[in-house]
Length: 299
Ligand code: TXA
Ligand code: MG
Image 1 (cartoon, protein in one colour):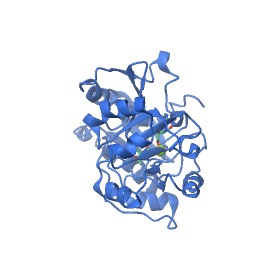
Image 2 (cartoon, rainbow, N blue to C red):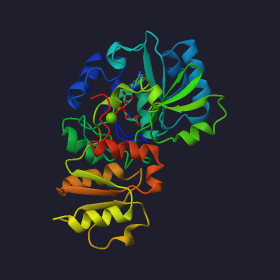
Image 3 (tube, rainbow, N blue to C red):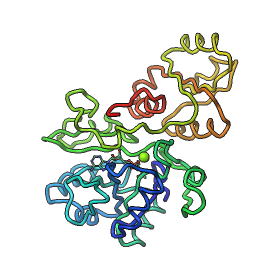
């Protein structure tokens, strides 16, 4: 199914065989819970406790429908296959109209992870899903995804709002909301327990080897000693600084697209210029560090 973030592989939460099939097709570890997608606040309330419903109101009134996933205590309506046995559930109300219609037609919330094979970059176009999962999976083509990066996953713990996975909504946007909640990054060492189970797996990795450079100088140093010219991903506007090899603009929306494109061209090495603008973009940096195999926390 298309969403405004990335494509998802969906099953009705009332259909245990569909849920089991999702884990099989993706090769997804059983201990990594799925996000449940809803089309209304009523559907969300049914999946959680009264306490969870308050959290959903506090955040959802600002950011739903949209790319925010809220982790709340789960009710007995959530099958344990979906929550991976946790006592919480991750809920998101997407804004993509095709998906909203699909959930309404299905008359049930849809559990869905990103529709890539586990470990591959998330799919941002229908053909990426077919490339990973083959023709046996029905793909509802809703066009290229607007954000091109996954939703931000948050949880309220002891009165603080913890970002378990940085994503399409930045911490700055969360801080600017009138929620009365202080925002914390789950990657702060003292909060390292509060991370999404899925964050411990190496994700978003293309076949190509990825090298991250902080400055134009570092990139040039690399190019001087390289035996083969790499593909360069550089912040938009920086392309002119390098004329010797192929350059592509690096943005949150296009990163996964570029990684898949590089693989289809059998690119061996990708060099990424992570200047200040990139380093201050937490979601983009998070995906780049994982793609480069540098962030392997928990493995
Ligand atoms: O944008 C998105 O979020 C996309 C689209 C399809 O909605 N979905 C997506 O799903 O990225 P997935 O399964 O690839 O990532 C879901 C993340 C994982 O890191 C998982 O561990 C975390 O959400 N998660 C799910 N349930 C959780 C829970 N109860 N507590 C903490 N983290 C949870
Ligand atoms: Mg995923």
